[in-house]
Image (cartoon, rainbow, N blue to C red; front, side, top):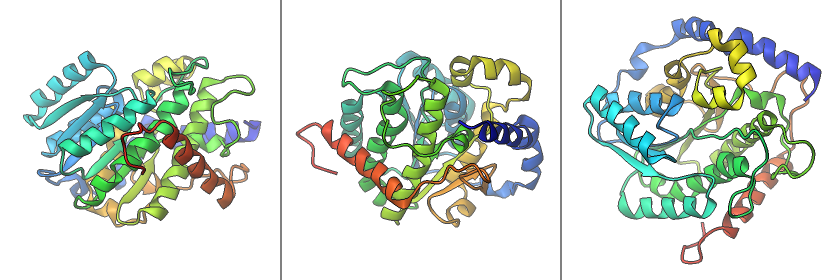
Length: 325
């Protein structure tokens, strides 16, 4: 990452990504956008037991939506579900256990979900992983890539047929402003070369999510795709994955509810779906995916190649009993 990119990103963050920035931006929000009933609509949220995911699940349950919480830890998920049901009175909150880093199990989960449920209106890809050191899963894939990119790709692609059959389908992916310092790299997807810097690997994955969203929006035009940056949020993932940043910025970090606001807006607001599909959002506004003069643009060929590589890799781990995507 260049010194310029780093400096430009941090200055931008201080003015746009903090708690005070949210409070300022929220003065322009249209309150009635979120004054809606979601009764009869089904939402799947990954990583829904804490942080932004739980805040999103809570907001949707309050509006009467059916919530499918996809979580890695059963005890934490059930505890979060109990909190949500108690606070909202909505019993249509369901827990599903899945570790997105276990690639074959992502396939199996998505296929089983399609067999059991007849509708899914909104998928919110929120779960993410920042690793302090390189680690591989049982299938030989670098774990954070498996979670942040390949798992998101497989879950989304596998659920697209169910989404397409449902009313007003949407896919929202929770990315990060960190991706602004990264140019798409497709030659080292498994982080095998060079020094492993978990925060930078995570930022690269978030760039890949943005490209993935743009490409899927072109191919699946009946679904509204979006990707969003929640700002700098005080979550367990940030505290554990970026302890120095968390410690230095703690007093300026957003609450999980503030971080979740744009994801909720994208998931439920009629106004959100009127915007073009495939765009990047921050504080309910479409925003650029590149910093000025940061040299992070990639070619259309590179972006298409990423999707091609993900498609090929996904099929490698597709259980033989399943149909091809």
